[in-house]
Image (cartoon, rainbow, N blue to C red; front, side):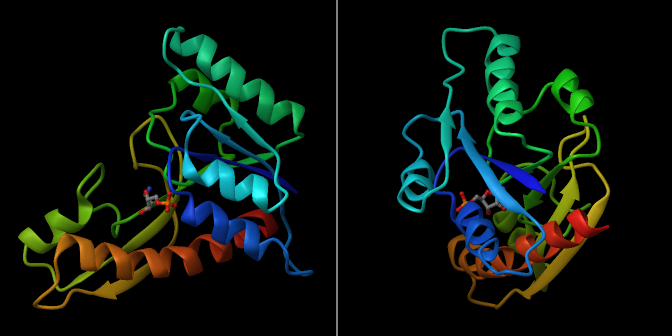
Length: 186
Ligand code: GRF
């Protein structure tokens, strides 16, 4: 199955998905990496690693026009499933409806806890002993769709948001390729 990945920045989860796709038993191929940020560092990594890229800034155009460009690039690449990987823009209800049940996302918390931003700082401030990451189906509700898989990471007494984020990120890189493969094989 052909997967398209949407990014806005670093793209380390995108890279983990691309690297996992090189295994012969992997059930998906990464057909396109697309970004709303033409200067996203992840786009350079994708190009260097032989993956097709597409960038469309949403600035100075209507949201519908921006999303039509992304949608067109994904369809031209034959994409069947979209994986969001640090894509920092809300998809419209229309876009989600057109790809219903075929968009997944990775979020750095144990959903349903800590939807939205600053998840690690919020988990530490709440006195939680465990943090983690979740892969879920994308619906119209932010970080609200069915959870497909999670990984837990203990919170240490001396953790900062940054140190915790770094340890959770390592688990994200293991979880996302595994759950995407299961999702494709389901
Ligand atoms: C990750 O922590 C992901 O869970 C969140 O945004 C971050 C993206 O990092 N949605 P990267 O671009 O994949 O390195």
